[in-house]
Image 1 (cartoon, rainbow, N blue to C red):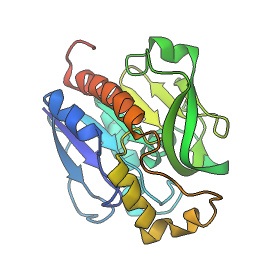
Image 2: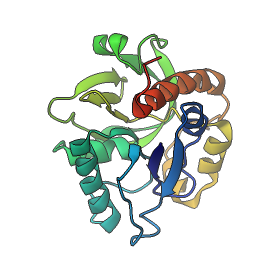
Image 3: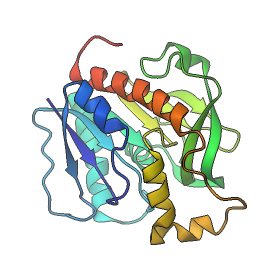
Image 4: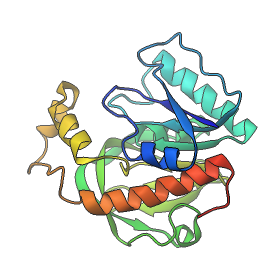
Length: 232
């Protein structure tokens, strides 16, 4: 059983998602269409797709964006489980007709997310701390796709998590990051313009322990969902 991981920049990888996939018995392969436009991405035998983050916008006229939007729609038609993180969530939203646009403010750093009533019975999000302090790095947001269920929100961003159908999830925040990943992002040239807008520095370790517990739970649950095993 395999999962295709669509990575948009090399430094935004699976992080905490990787051990959860291994635990669920799922192998994974990175598909870097942004760097390798000609790479093939066959859905044959695939149990899940994961779309990671990146500094670009889904509204940019980029070849890989158009390809991934098409792949998302194909996968949904086949009933394949999907998970989108930040840019990935925006891709899923746009693929199903929702608008993606600038958020009123950029969320960069550690901020609380609250869960909706629907999240309390959700296969991935039930039982999580409320509020939950998670890591954010985004300047855009999305409307919810038609027929989807809103699962999370924050003071600065109304739509932080959603579910479409029974096995498609979008997360605007970063539940997958480790302190090493955050520290690396802070050093990336592509991110320096965002960092100059901050009024205080970002501490990669501030809520990392709690985040790792939540991420382990949510991603293990998604792995069981993708693999077809009984829910945790």
